Image (cartoon, rainbow, N blue to C red; front, side):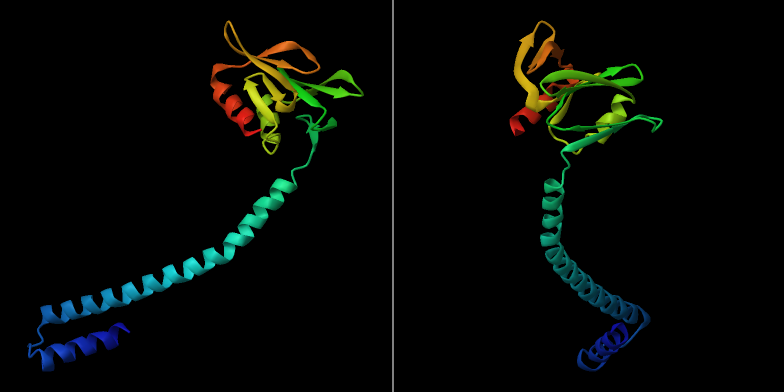
Length: 187
């Protein structure tokens, strides 16, 4: 395409435009030919890319919808050393508290509040629970199930959460206040 285009431009310049073909004119003709072919190639690539995106959009929406539907409602906790496993339904989980190198899982089972201590960190647990929007980090040492939040009130040193079926107040750290408010608005 570039060669044919260059020959055509040179022929046009020499015989129609009556220009003598010198080295600078030949270079200009080649640059014009390359520019024309680059524009054609880029336009074609954009067209093909647009077609591919249009084909992928419905598939991407379907994948997103499937992921939202497939969020498991059963949470499997495991210890750091993978020796202890604990499975719990999301509806049972009230909160998770940090206890040094352990997490304390507080949950409801047969209308009783129970606790389970598992060797794991809050960071690892938070990564595990990312796919559950119901679980909100409210403090560096605490995560709560937003379905158990009864009341959010302002305390002397920030926000305080009162939970159903759990007698203690949970303090909200300043760095997690915005996340908590956004999560509660989303519900």
